[in-house]
Every structure is written in C-alpha cells, then in structure tokens.
Image (cartoon, rainbow, N blue to C red):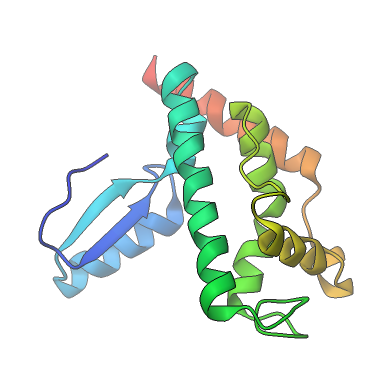
Amino acid sequence: MAESSSHQVKLYGAAISGYANIIHCALKLKGVPYDYFVGLTYVILSSEGDAQRKAAEEYREHMITLEDGVREDLWSGGPFINGESPGLLDLVVGSGRDGIACMGELAGVKLVEKERMPLLCSVMEAFVKLDAVKEVMIPKEVHMKYILAIREKISASSA
C-alpha cells in the first residue's frame, strides 16, 4: 500500500476497478491532489498465505470499526441504521453481504460475525429480505464464481 502523505483526499481502490478509475480520472481532471491506496479487497483476491490473512484481518477490523461507529453515532433501533427504511449506508452494507462472505471464504476468515458485529449483520439480513432487493440480488454462488475468475485473471497477469 502507498505511504500516506499530506493530501487530504485518500482514494482506496483496485488497479482493475473501473469505479476507482472513474475517481482517478475525475480527481486528475479537477487537479485535486490525492493519495492512492490499494484496497484490501484487491489484496485479499490477489494474494495467498500470510499476506491474504493479514489483509482479511485488517478488513475485518475495519468492519468492526464501522459496527462501533454505527452503534455509537447512527443506530436508531433498526431494522435499518436510520430506522424502518433503508438509507444509503444500509444500501452499501446490505448489497455487499454475499461478496463479503465470499471474500472471507476465500481467505478462510469470517469478515463479518454476528457475535462481534450484530448490527451490521442485522442490517444485511433485513436488506436482503426486502422484496425489491430479492428481485435483483446476485446469488452467492455467482459472486464466488466471479471472485474466483477475478483471482485467476490477477494470477495470470502477474505470472
């Protein structure tokens, strides 16, 4: 990962992420100085052994930090973070449920655990039970196939 500098804007992404590339381009076009960090998701997908376990544990620690922040500053009693209806953070957390689970399986680490992150788990479960979401959620098996295909492409490009 890149070393931190004095820039206020920090971009976390993956070299193969179209979304991160959009932000790279926008920041460059606007002349905004920024620091770029390779995202933990990319490290989990592209590494093995100790490096992968370390990235997965760091990811898990970030999820614990998110859980603690939600509990301390945002939680309204649920089922969603801000109450009875899902908001933007519920969308981000809930839609990532199966992808996060697949990355954890790949690394052999549970990235989100009910015992330590009950609020995030409950938001994820409430989110995927919404009728509108059920219609469009990507099945976990499809996530895993996609993640394994990405991992294979990364391995092939670095060989």
